[in-house]
Length: 291
Image (cartoon, rainbow, N blue to C red; front, side, top):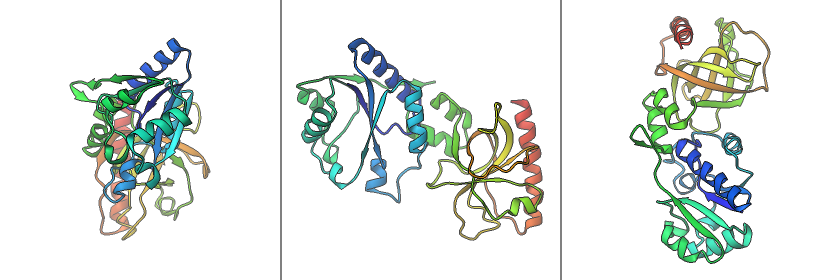
């Protein structure tokens, strides 16, 4: 087995370069290309309150890995037992005994094992039955491609920069659930997609919705807690799809964010909110017509 190891959050262009090298080496060595990843993210385990938002769900990450040629993805549950595993024990029990690796690809800054004590030099020294290759930094327009860089671009509303780092537009996926039907009562019925984790973005966006036919449908979306309606609301993705009125509860949608229009805001009453929604719809239509 040819293996690479990492969290692969977002599967950005740096990850994609690693996966391309993994698949290439696996073909040369007649091995299956595989990924070892972790869930939850180690930072979610050690500091759940300060962990960064995920760029992709586990389901979406697995789909991206498969799309880039990975034959097998192994998901290691990151818990106290795994966190306490010494670097040499990780090599022996996980890489050799459990996975039987023959070739391993890691980043040149790779750290592993208890207290992140293991590094590339230790991995190479411990590799008795497999070979190790290191991959350098991948840059996009002079910036290191990383999950942190994507999060920073998204947090600043720079969707174009995020797309350049990801190699594709940023999107959120999920299933449509029943809501309070407030949007429908205001003349703007929305598809409500609850978000299990804090998203990497917030605000109002012009969007394209995939999963409801052969072509993407234009719309406007809100990602946030809906402060005008709820004092302490759950984070949700609400999408108003233009010129669309069908029952889609339970459907899985991919909502591609095209441009950020504004931050989420609290309005004094529903009439003020309704007027702002009308402005958002007009702006989103103009943005999408021009893009």
